[in-house]
Length: 240
Length: 240
DNA sequence: CAGTGGTCTAGACCACGGG
DNA sequence: CCGTGGTCTAGACCACTGA
Image 1: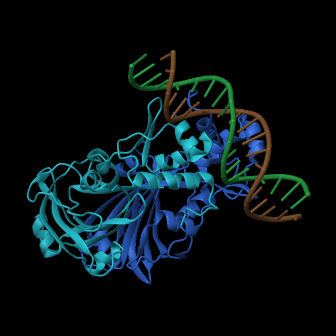
Image 2: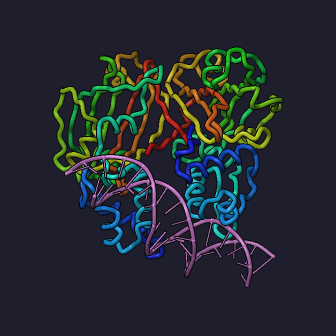
Image 3: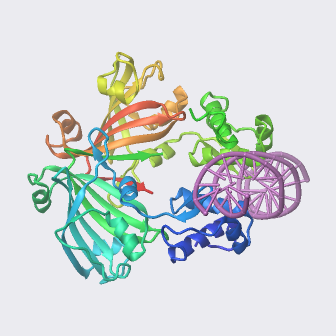
């Protein structure tokens, strides 16, 4: 683990704070104690605490505002879309898709799902299938698996236009904050079932994305397969 | 600019050091002065200097090694591949492609090239076309444009297997270090010319990537179009 | 105005690497 | 051993916010 006694103080403080936030000691939107109070409580100097807070801020787990205080970052549709939804219009403009769930079931994880989510054989997952629309056109099909253990009693209305991002829902209703996603992209010919959903001919080129999302403690919490029709969309990323 | 007199000291120090590195005061692989010497030279405390160095280190412009010193990061094939070449095998294993240049010309920039590289109409670019092979199979076709002004006298042998990454070549021979790339991905049917190069049927699904690469001072220095055959490859990225 | 986070400093001490 | 960067502290002062 990273919580070795040998690790620097600031790193241990960072882990301590991360764990406390993950445990819900301070919930999204709430303020942490002041730097003076926190450093006294942790028995470290303010400078060392600030270094730990700086890391958490860089990871967007917290937000610091001069003159106000330090807050646990709250997931918003805005932010979720901006950070983790990389599709944009051909001209680079932002896109705000709507979405509609058309299947929701709870079943034993398939082998690929269990593997992606580090679940034992036979563990239950909630499985969602949905479409996302851009300018009234179906542009994205998705199949999502969530560990039942992390999302007990998960539910969403079928067939209704959803405005909020799923990640906002995860945080508000299940206390799970997505911090990082890993994706593997490929270009494939649309399988028949997907082609139907997206209004394409079978075999037409679509972008396929296999995503695993990780939470604050870097545990895998969602596996998502996406099929994206990229005639009117671009998937924009930045590497540095 | 970011070099306002009002900006914090550490930010001004960071910009100052970045500019000096870009200007070649310390070349890739060379050591910067010690922290004590640098802080004295810049008239700031060691703590403030360390903060500036921390930013440059996070951006991988420099590397600090305890007991040794601070060095300007040198581009290596290893690093260039790892950071900016996101293709991997289906099982997640790394891939080391070979490449072969089959066209090299210098001509006025096309409108899209001029736009991508912030060049005036009619400015000259070097235009490269190459193929990249994975396990002996042509898997990637690329067309690359470089501003002639930044790469005077650019040349590479045609038709030979190249081992070094292009970005290593940019740094070694033209003093240009790529720090960041922006990409737009889509899935398209392979155009006839590309299909021929990749051994695909015309219209077969390929991943298309339009990339712009930026240097140390965040100027656009390369525009690259790639067509990737993703039957044996995945494009792996991480968002956080 | 009081209280918050942001900047900057000076200095002690530690850990590492090489002569 | 010495010189390097890495950690940690204590404290002064600034800049912003809201009552």
